[in-house]
Image (cartoon, rainbow, N blue to C red; front, side):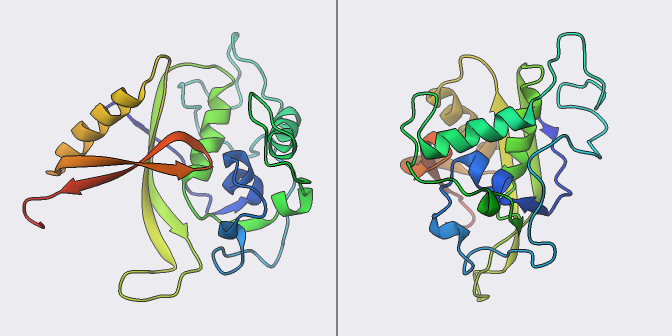
Length: 212
């Protein structure tokens, strides 16, 4: 379906990429110790910066670390400040969460709770040379869950991102119907949902003939 796999070999992330860049407020329950594994040594990382060991190529196919003529250099300090301002007082039409953004909380090291941290990093990279792109990943994530018959502290997440112009919610629904149909899942139902980093958001329910 035209997707390119994202590099997902970085299991440890900062709170910035795992939460803040996704507009999850710093007082959100998902950031509590009972939900997230925090690293004890070292506890914190540097502010966002260029990856010292980047992937072999950028999502658009250009060699990593070798900007094209039309590609602008990413300003990570500007990005940091934009995210901070969006949380504190709002930005880009948002009123923000109106709280004091704590750098120490943002730079705490965590075992990533979702692969969306990687998607955010890749989309920021794509901003150096905006173009249509499709990314996917299938990899491990970690949650501080009570282990039982249906929960583990480690599981796999499937993720896909489509970046393009003129995208619509109807187009997304149509794509999901094709995606699930390839796995034999039909009769989908879509339910409106809330996520702090996507708007609009939906939950998807499907019916499988063999499973009922």
